[in-house]
Each structure stands twice: as C-alpha cells, then as structure tokens.
Length: 204
Image (tube, rainbow, N blue to C red; front, side, top):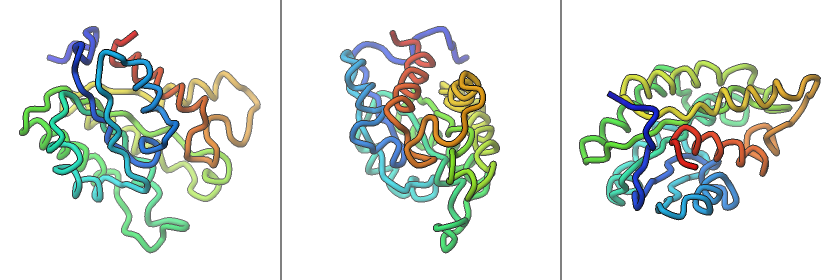
C-alpha cells in the first residue's frame, strides 16, 4: 500500500525527470530540484515537443538504461495540443491513449526494478493566447494522469491543483500568470512546480 506520509526518496537515491520542454528547460524546475536536493542525483531526461507516444519510443534508452532509483513522469501538455492549431498535421492523442501510455511507462519501469514512480499532472489550462487557440482541453488529461497514478500506485504530484490555486489567489487577473507564452513556465511557475513536487515527495 502506498504510504503518502513517507518520503518518496531515500538519501542517495537518483531520480530521473522524464518529460517534454517544461522538463528540458535549462533554468526550469529540474534545476531547482537539483539545487535543493543535494542528497540525491536529479537527472534531466526532458525533450522538447514530447508526447507520450513519442516518449515511449525513447523510454528504454532514456529511462531504463540509465537505471535510476526513482522516476517522475511529467507529460501531457503536448498530448492535449497535437492535432490542433500549428500541430494540426499530427495525429491526436486521445485522453484514453494518454492514460494508457502513462500506465505502460509505469509497467515497463516496474519490470526493470524501478519501484519508486511519480506522475505529475499537466497544468489545468493553457494561459492567454494559447487558451484562446486551444480552449479548455487540459482538464481531462489532468484527470487521466491522476487515474494512471492511482491505478499504478504511484506518487501523484498535483500540479493542476497548485496551478489553479495560484490563479485563485489573483482574482481579476487575466492573460499570463505562470507562463511566458501560455504554456512554458516563468521562473515563478517553475518554482511553484518544484515546491509542489517536493511537497508531494515529503522532501524539505
């Protein structure tokens, strides 16, 4: 049974952050974790533009072959957006396909002995012009990430709730609050994400 009151990691554990451009960002949340988690090795395995179907093709080389003690999966924004707007020429990734892909990643990791797995939800919505372009499409992907974490007994990082709560703290605000372009996080957004991760992992 998953004990959410226990720290996700033990001292000396390595944790690999697997995700898209939000993870790959040079000055993003991973660099904050690296600075704060001195007892752990934090590995950045982000790739810009990644979606779960594409991420599965590199899962062996970028996750399993690196043999981390723990894994965090943070994907979903691109899964929701493909097939629309500037990505209209790509196949869509349905909510169910996204959920199943997360489950497969967890299954493949566990087969190779990676037992400490965390899933971070996407943000609950795009901001500003990105929201106008895509609409309210991220919410079901957030629920799918939560369902995958529950099904696979993974540690959930509820970034959707933290993001929403930050907007609630700024009544009357419009436009961009936590992102530079509607999707990619500002310094404040990355700090919020890092704090949410550390809180979910019970790391001070």
